[in-house]
Length: 466
Ligand SMILES: C[S@@+](CC[C@H](N)C(=O)[O-])C[C@H]1O[C@@H](n2cnc3c(N)ncnc32)[C@H](O)[C@@H]1O
Ligand code: SF4
Image (cartoon, rainbow, N blue to C red):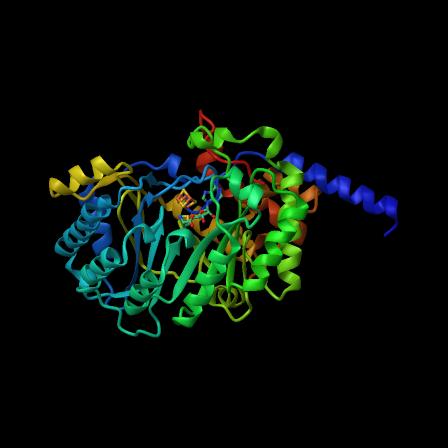
């Protein structure tokens, strides 16, 4: 390519990032949370939980939310409670166990059906002391059935600054085999600006200790688009990441939602990479991960080829849920703890988001329902299509009418070479994301989002797509 045509291509790519950088959902569920309706009643929810386990072969997953963090990282979009008071953990573990026992009493099948996967997220689950974790797992696992230990996956999100050897030992004792570490960025200046000083040595030592103790897989969370990140700084962060060679890497786009997370207002606009400049950070990291032998999974994950996430993508079994990309698909995802989101084939359910409301519901012997959604037949169809596009980068269209609508809605993306509509192997038309289109996957999913098309949110809710 001549230097003029290379320059033209760069400018063309920049203009695409400007054109398509619009607020759009991340599609970890469909319908997306702001459009949920029709499930405020716990009895309907409990009947769905029971029904989802009707088959003796049913498999289920558990998510446990631990909201506490000792300090606030100012970029954070998670549902957390910031406190240095560790006395809070004791009543919280009591409440989690109370909630679990309430489910067991109302849906006795939960004790018989195979628990395939448990995930602890937050906040910071290792805010809990090793003793509290021990008490929590003893209570949760006393009545669960995880038939084949080789098939059982247990994973946890940890903050390396708040995790010690004793935590890891308790986790291993209860069968935890995957650990995900919050890293975000190794550059001291970026860490200072986001209020998260985390020397490389801490992450390196925890990675080494986890491997020694037998964790099969170590994941790092990184974020691009943070304040003062530059092409040079992201290269250094990736080089340091590669020194430790985690099995998986999540490289999240910084979700800027200051109307929900006021601490994000502390960042100066001029410090925040945006649009094409932000995307360039992803592209630099991507190239380095691919050169180091990682496989790109979906739109923001990388994994070593032997890792189960990479294999799931190759075998076409990749899934996506509230936790992002996963190789775990089950008949029920049951969430415990504040703000936890559960899923059955027919519905979504979210727990109370505030600690006092969650505690009051449990004290009154109620399932702590905050809100939920019952899927319509159309929702189920759109959910399948969005999931296909997100995990396989292609989605079959229902009929000629939907193909014509897609051609119309996606015309700009088709003309820009980001999306194709073409016959699938089965004969019917399908939408395909081209290699250049990958950064704009969420924009293409919006075609299937009937609820967003029918009613745009009145307030800004979603972060921008890039
Ligand atoms: C619950 S935290 C991980 C565990 C632990 N609290 C920690 O930070 O080490 C989940 C992950 O969400 C990601 N995250 C949080 N806020 C984000 C935001 N605004 N945009 C993109 N990713 C974000 C971070 O990568 C973080 O590691
Ligand atoms: S990134 Fe992790 S440690 Fe930091 S505030 Fe968010 S949940 Fe807490």
